[in-house]
Image 1 (cartoon, rainbow, N blue to C red):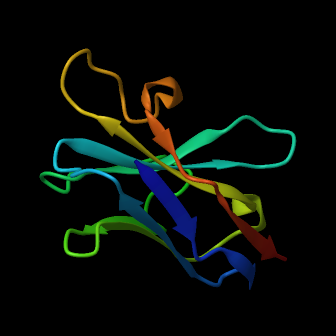
Image 2 (cartoon, helix red, strand yellow; image 1 turned 120 degrees about the horizontal axis):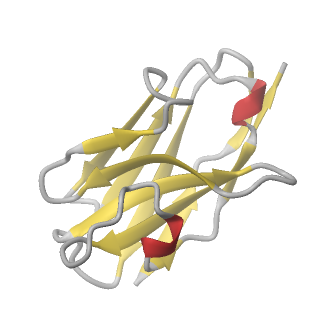
Length: 126
C-alpha cells in the first residue's frame, strides 16, 4: 500500500488549499482514510477522516466548518479542502489509512492507522 500526499504550499491567512492523497496497492472500500498534521515541536494531531465505503466524515474541532474531506473512487484519491486558513494551520500534513472492523478506535486514534503517506508542508503566513 502506498499513500502519496501532495498539494501543500505557502498561502496567506484567509486563503485556501486542497490537499490530495493518492492511494494505491489495494482496494480501500473497507478502509477509513485520515488526515493528520504535525507542527514543529508539537505532537501529530487528527484533522479529518472519511469512510471509503459510505463517505461518512469526521473532523477535529479546530478545522470543523473550514475544511472538507472527500474521496474520488475512480481516482483512488482523498482530498482535504481547507478554507479560511490560519497561521496555526501551519504544519506538515499526512494522510493515513486503516482497515475498519474489529476492535473500534475513534478516527483520531493515531496508533490505529496502518499506512502513512510522506507528508506535505502547509505554511500559512499572517
